[in-house]
Amino acid sequence: MGRKRCVGGDGSKMAAGCCGVKKQKLSSSPPSGSAGPGGGGSGSHCGGAAGGEPGALPPPGGPRLNGLGGLAGGAAGCALSPPLPPSCGGGPAGLSPPAASLLSSPGAGSVGPGCRKMVVSAEMCCFCFDVLYCHLYGYQPPRSPRFTNDPYPLFVTWKIGRDKRLRGCIGTFSAMNLHSGLREYTLTSALKDSRFPPMTRDELPRLFCSVSLLTNFEDVCDYMDWEVGVHGIRIEFINEKGSKRTATYLPEVAKEQGWDHIQTIDSLLRKGGYKAPITNEFRKTIKLTRYRSEKMTMSYTEYLAHRQHHHFQNGIGHPLPPYNHYS
Image 1 (cartoon, rainbow, N blue to C red):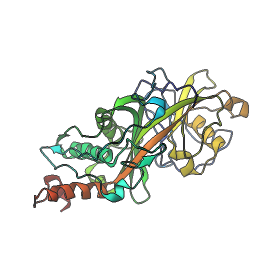
Image 2 (image 1 turned 90 degrees about the horizontal axis):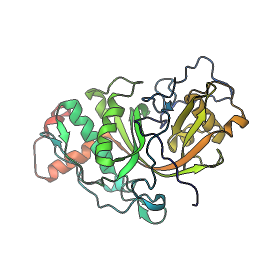
Image 3 (image 1 turned 180 degrees about the vertical axis):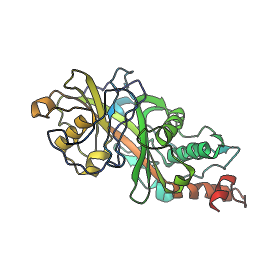
Image 4 (image 1 turned 90 degrees about the vertical axis):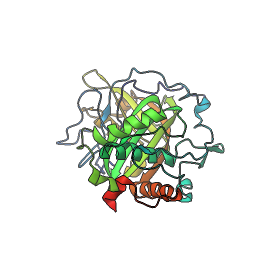
């Protein structure tokens, strides 16, 4: 505690390095043949696709994220009772509350530091699947969910297949009300991640959805002052052309890739478009913000089971219209 709260990031919509990047060799010089992202325009992305590498973020200048939705001291929010997710208007029925297996996983109803319950929940992943499903099948958008609508910076990540390859990841450092934010970034990450073609119906059964809510933003004076596997980091630096650039990784990235602090920083610099040799003196010029996230992941199979469970709990014996495709 006692650290200055961060200017939580950009006011524009943006994406950030989240997950699914391939293992890469890191060095202090640019990788041969690599084409890093261009200037700091909007629409840059997260963890890579085939051969993929995380991208840079647009330049900062957005509103401050003081308190992150009014959560004093960076707390992640109060306890929530398990709500029922919405149904697609004119289409499928809603979902039941999460099963015990989901509630016992990190996320909804789990107890975090300080004996508090986390804000992120399985219902948020269900809602993202609702939004995508209704969009792909032409149903009306789902009704507003019953989980909290407090504002948070957020990311929606899609992975696919047994090896959980990245399929899309876009989010924002501007705090958004969760109902509208998850609606928007569900479809943005699924359909408008420029590294991938828009998602199709056929891919639905193999998808995994992750919702990350970002909290506890802190500016730090030392670029090494963060913990691998605990903190996400966002760096701001001046490139060799004198332009301000930013890039970020969500907390899980460095640990999943097996990177230490220096490897993670250097990877972010490269993905932010820095081409010159990276020296320790240059690393010391970086402005670094560390943050944490609450994350929940759900597979499409789990989502479908929860939907059908609620459907049959209500005594409806016939398949839901959108599921005729899978019956």
